[in-house]
Amino acid sequence: MHEGEVPIDAQLVGRLVGDQFPAWSDQTLDRVDSGGTVNAIYRLGAELSVRLPLADWGVESLEREFSWAPRLAPHLPLEVPRPLVRGVPAHGYPFPWSIHRWIDGTIAIPEHIEDARTAAVEIAGFVRALQAIDTAGAPENTHRGGPLVPADWSTRTAIRACQGLIDTTAMLEVWERALAAPPWDGPVVWTHGDLWYSNLLAVDGRITAVLDFGGIGVGDPAIDTLPAWSLCDVTSRPFFRSVLGVDDATWERGKGWAVSMAAQALPYYLDTNSIIVDNARRMIEQLLTDAT
Image 1: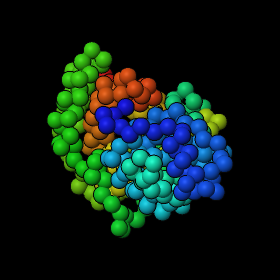
Image 2: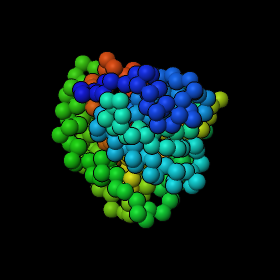
Image 3: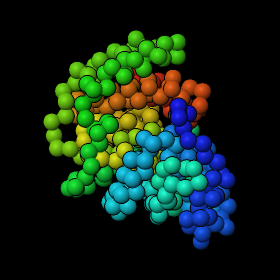
Image 4: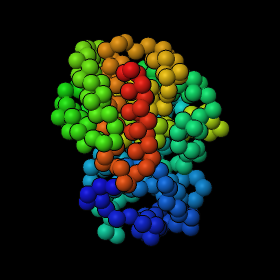
């Protein structure tokens, strides 16, 4: 998916696990076909998973998830990653890596959700619980926790790259309204920062887990309105917003982040990650539905 991506296969992962954690060397190993863009993921036996950064910029995400997901988990209503051990570079693989507890479920594409309104309330409840956690000592969400303005150039460039794929004029109008919204002037709160539906798991039609805490940090709560357009539709979106209690300015900035993320993902992953592309298309469709 990425230029300079490190090649990873089951043979390499098996050698890493076998040498560094021999107690698990007899477990089966299967590549997981996920929407992940930062790590290669392998299921290790029935109870574990192995996560290996694809590039050097994924190492910080691994460390942040390893440090913070276990601390936040007791305060959250849905299951989250449970990292167990860190591995070290070896056998030509240049980065730290980790082994986690396996979390059952399927990617929460809207078609897998039994009741959209219930799902909207569940994920909004997760966001509210996250925002309520004490932020003492928390890292900053430097990527998506601040103002939209620094993302203006990259977002406009991405929207232009979507020419022929989406209504770029309408998307630019949504982006410009978001830029004009008043900035966040309240206290920073915990933010997940990457609540695509591909980072949500469902069991029996209910949201049960939130994955990928690599971008966890404190900042503007607008970024975690993303499920409003990633997961929800026009009928369930009001329930999501009501539970969050989001003001108009934060809602508009949230739309801006959804525009920015979807517009950058769509052309970049068009031929390499169908899950992310489908999610980006859905977000754009929902954003433009709101705009009409």
